[in-house]
Amino acid sequence: MASLLITFLLLVSFLSLSSSSSIVIPATRSESETRMLYEGWLIKHNKSYKNAQEKEERYAIFNDNLRYIDEHNTGNHSFKLGLNQFADLTNNEYRETYLGLEVAALNQTHKESDRYRFNKSDMLPNSIDWRDEGAVVPVKHQGNCNSCWAFSVVATVEGINQIVTGDLISLSEQELVDCYNKGCQSGYVNYAFEFIINNGGIDTEKDYPYKGQYRTCNTDKKNRKVVSIDSYEDVPHNDEKSLKKAVAHQPISVLIEAYGRDFQFYRKGIFKGYCGTAVDHAVTLVGYGTDDTTDYWLVKNSWGTYWGESGYARIKRNSYSIRGTCGIAMWPYYPVKKKNKGNPVEVKASANSCTNLYQSAS
Image 1: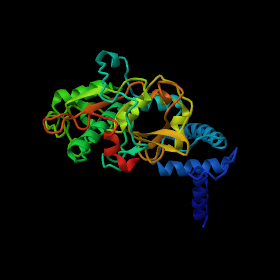
Image 2 (image 1 turned 180 degrees about the vertical axis):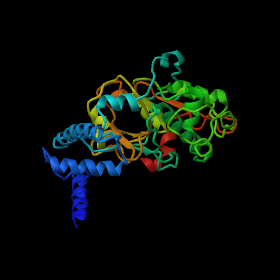
Image 3 (image 1 turned 90 degrees about the horizontal axis):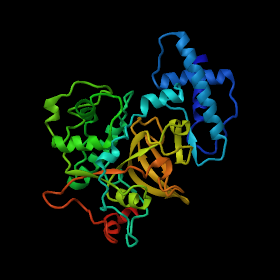
Image 4 (image 1 turned 135 degrees about the vertical axis):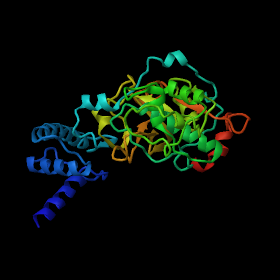
């Protein structure tokens, strides 16, 4: 009987951090309630520690994070926070483990293209969601490896391959970790595209599965080259209208600043939290839309489905800054894949092309 009561209380506590905006979250929690939440969280995320001392140390961090979440959720914000797999990590630990990105070499391979440069005559759909078009595989999880760049790049290649060929194939991030970057110590988005191009393609996720750590490059699998691309380009930088035009045609790799606790514990809604433009994380734009009067980007992350809106985030679009919210418009990349031996698919983005192509999304 006692175990059933504890289970009931745990469920009630977890529901207090659920997606219902009508729930009033307490400003403070009792020690017993917080302890029960912690024990339930440990079970949900299959967490264990080497000894009781470490468990208490992590509890203190959990308690501090929970207090931050509760205080945010009692305020008037466009988005809510919630407990996720990062709840026992300090913000510094979260940043060191999950925000792996190199940006120093971006200008060295700058390939800004006019392909998706916005023109006043362009008529773009009001919204697009590439999940509905069958161009997005389920959310993946990078684990304790600084490989966000690999997931962002692979998602765009999966997307353009489906758009051109009609086949949605989950591709191998592990190949990039092993054969291009040789480790989990961050990487370059642009160099990952170049690796796929120079290698003549990339293997499937099924054949070369993700392990979340560096392993010696499997040259046999590296040479299978199941899906290829012809090149990659930059969307015009610091231009959300051009970025919208690009996303109307295909998923786009972008870089954002994600180090704040608001992003660490994002649960739902349109993110307008504190962030700057010191980009440190790579994600994939798979759509855009408007909720009431607020425009947003639909972002696919690589932290599993316990984070955000089942692994996705909606980030404010049409920011006051030309760089976009969290710097999202600063460094957008996309792969180019030719259909048969002709021109790349749907490259015109003319006044009528988007409207005709994606009329159902308008």
